[in-house]
Length: 386
Length: 132
Image (cartoon, rainbow over all chains, first blue to last red; front, side, top):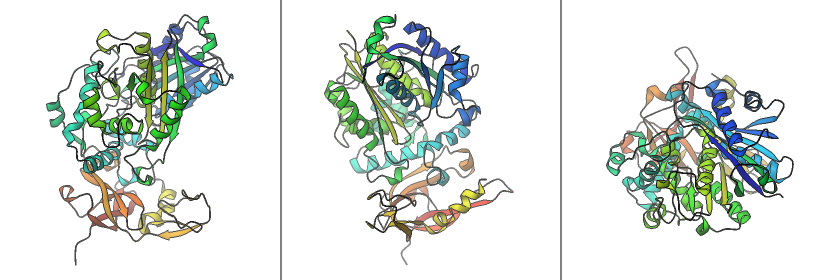
């Protein structure tokens, strides 16, 4: 297997992009990444997207993006794994390049969630869950996470207000990310007063619906000197799965998909959790941050909040989390999110982020993209190239 | 409305029909073609009694389109006596009165109507067991 690198990065701001359509967002991010890398063309394009069919009445994104990106005749395909679609697309590119089937692959995650009303998008997002047995019962996606959070509070005896540590940190970092949707700080007091979406989850636990596209160019490590882009090494990009429906899991508070994905990723990268210098995790809801930290091996079961307070998750802390603002502060254009996470981590390793959020002495970054309530999890480990 | 789907799921929705593995005895709901425990395909129908306890619950204020008119409403994870967990709405109880560990029983109720002239979807919901 060949070693693989990321040689180019591109992203649009995460916004309500009412003036742009799906294809233009995707093409902007992809061509920006190609310019950053200094590549004329690619051998293939993987498009990460969840809801183009439901919310833009557009499927068949692979060929559409390839066509509008001016890459006539190049292979292109859409990869879908709910909110994990973005990193799933990176995984496909890594497989293609490491196997030797392709040398240079463009990955673009793209999503437009603001074309319709919030209620319509809420229903579309719920298709990540089991349609016959979860969604038809009236469960929203927030509702699924609320069931997890309620049980967590019950089992581990935390107060709901203890969870504010995660969104407060995410917003503090997103202030310095020009591509983030919410560039302002929030306080514990605002968190405590925030309105309920699905009890006990409130608005400030929840990442916002948004539009955006992010892209990376994946190439073989042996070829990086051919390009002008600043390379970052991909040590691992591994998938773990679990049951689609939450109710089918023996212990819903232990994300087996996360555990399976990180075990493979740590093994391939030959590292331990303590070697990770910062972690772009999937904070779609505060409860998922906690469960991810636990199943990824950073905190004991039920101890994520204590871990966050003790270790310090700020940029200067022991394990900086969501340095680009996370899903909470940056925004969560679902099928693009996994690529935004990797773009943020690569920028950190290249030393290309605002100095206020630059993690010092960073060497190894981890990102984690979670589809559904944990049914598809992709953990990516990146390393700085000196 | 996708009529064949609702017709196809009627035994699950009205009678909690799942599967029992004839090789290892494992019970599943929803029914599965492959036993998740021993991977056998040698399974038969199994009807759950519909008695259980609340594992977790939430009250939904911002609902998907189809359920918007009944919001806020409560949904839970119910641990059935037979050792299987299912997702269902609560009925005949106020959101503030639902607690983890509360004993509940299954009843058939209207889940939603597909517009004023469309068919009505019925299915299981759970209510507190009131001591006789």
